Length: 321
Image 1 (cartoon, rainbow, N blue to C red):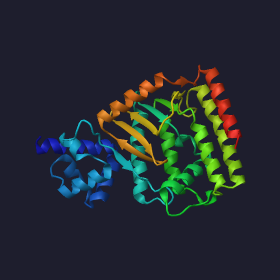
Image 2: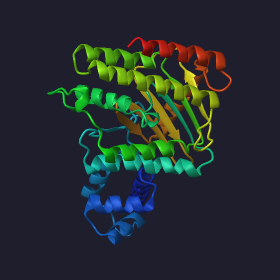
Image 3: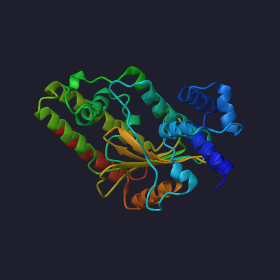
Image 4: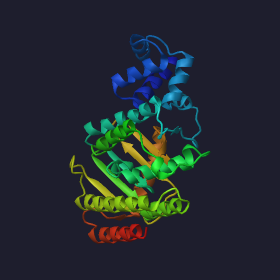
């Protein structure tokens, strides 16, 4: 492969990670500590990226150099673990989330954009109006993965307002994906109820907070049941479907598809993600999730009987708190 071909593939990979031109330029200016014109010359191929610049960009944006030159094994696909600091975020954490939001915005303009999410935790984009559920997942992340050397009581956990605003943008843009499908683990509510019971038993959540979590969960069930019955987002009119899997999941998996971008995502450590832009990885995810849909039960729109049964069961599980 020639140097020109490698440069073209590298620039293409950068643009896939950050499609918005102004955001891309600003990111590279900050990352490489060079002037905007110097960035333009590199992106046009008039000046070559140095080895150090390639390493810095690849590390920051999760670009596989092996993938670029075609030297990776067919048994291995490139993934990037996105470790965000949720309690006390730094600027890089915000930029990581904002970069994903930029990719989501592409779906707004793409009439064929689609997303399929296979979840064993409640989806973040629906939780912004449920402060206690949002805080609970943050609380669990903090005590399990954030700061293993110390524990925090539920009342001590509060998300940064700026981070909530970034998540709010994610929620808004997600509703502009033209077709969205959720496949839920059949025990998705049982898992969070079990966790609440555990943390209550070790006195990290008090009885009043358990009651507030219970109230939030019951409100959330009502909202999702209404959304499933309607089958469309109120804000955009775009269709959304809910399925209940007949098998349990060991993690949450999803993919986002637009005409210019294929992203496959694995949720790790409760709130963090492992992402890939690799086409083969996307193909594997797409095929697996489509097969999973065939063996799952639809509870949206026409699946009224199954929907009523599922949500009544979830209310009973939450009511046991």
